[in-house]
Length: 261
Image (tube, rainbow, N blue to C red; front, side, top):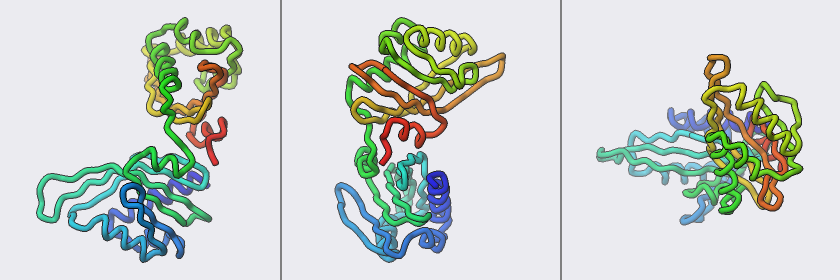
């Protein structure tokens, strides 16, 4: 259902931008609650309340559009990064801004819609959070730096002696690796198979000793360019990696470490 929710919301943005408010209203439950976070903190009920918020939002602007740039699934909720672009009614330079929306859906209909200026506030409402602990974020950065520089010993220093993990790269998919010998085997298999391989950390979120990292891997395999975007669920113990697994969707990764409600 979560992918259907994402697609429904995406279609809603398309309808909103082309002025099809009928389609947008059909997506809302009769008692939908629309609310705005800090600094407004106001709440509106029903479809008329949603229209009041929308009218207030676009007031004073022309050529107004919103583009969903990122979708984060969280059970029956979807967090959306939204880019707004508009011109003042008197013309002039475009006005751009980024907002975060939190949708709560039931049976395919939107029952709550929150609008936030800050990502952290939106994630908190959805039961998620940024993994902002300096040591944990530093561990993620150090791990990807070791991968990119080819420094196996630096990577091993970040993992527990009894680490256990699985891979999603084709040459090692379905294999469970254990301990530092397993790390060495995975390293040789994956890095040895690719030329010019590079990992780019896109986002990190988590809570306590559990986190999810979104990253992109690029390289060349047998003269064929390869690019994979995936999510890595990780568990730490004493600030070292004790377990990880790779997933094709953020929802699966969050579920694997219990970060979804």
